[in-house]
Image (cartoon, rainbow, N blue to C red):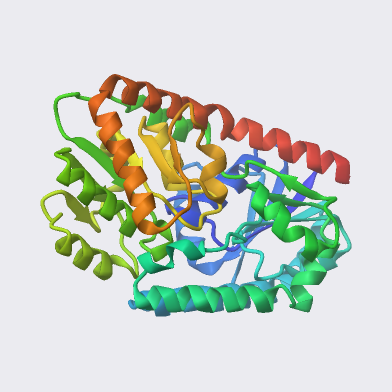
Length: 412
């Protein structure tokens, strides 16, 4: 079977959408002939992977666009990525049509970006089209708006406006209604996309965020026995945006500190909310407990993760959360918001889900959890082991390929 895959982000050595795109296309290439449309900026990384023997003969690439330097300003960076993706999507149909004349594809599929707001034109190729896995349907809970900085409040308002407009966009509606299948990562996305598609049929719940076996082994094998006498070590990662809920986590750590709990919190990333969060940390007197914007070298990442006890990231708008999953694989017990993606891969047997409420209430709930697990380190260790087993058993390459094989067999 010959698959045409649109993966705007596809980076063997990257993070976020880039590494996810690579996981998908390299996994599918183990079973199918895969022809990938991707952005020119990933060519150098893919060429490096080819030199290192990581690109099989069944994996073929065509590159679209011109790689321009990213703006240093984070808001401008976000706008630039959206503009680039719009241009990529617009250009992809002509490239795909020419390639289709040469190869004769059996199925076309969008891999990245996993957003529903920008339609893919590949449904017009007159072959079965799979739109997704699709995400980005998650609304920001209004109860938590007060935890955001003013620029982020404005961003969420713009996003809500964009959602209103995109739901009425003809290209988006045509794509949703002409796709044969729309895989989604959680149940909220099913409810959201059904009106756009005009029917529930064809929207498939699919655990699309997964890890190849080598990555699972790398993270799980580094897991170390957690020392019970030292302070709790909490971890967070991902683009530092208001939606990650780090402001609520800081408030919870402040409350825990007042109760005498020893805890360290390392957030190993940066983003538009970093300055606001540093000011908040200083205001709460947490400079001795919190490190924001810390970076781990990629070669040391797995070993560094193994030194943490807890993944504390009560994300308020996430389709999945690869950084949370990676921390769970390394044996970190997760504390997440009971909302959309993380609420479905975190269970009561491996972590805690905090109900959506006001920021003060959520912080109080998180503080109570931290106090409880600090007193029972053995239970914390058991939950960390269960978290690792949860991700390795339910979010692996094998289950993803089996699900995709089922969809492909029904299409062809």
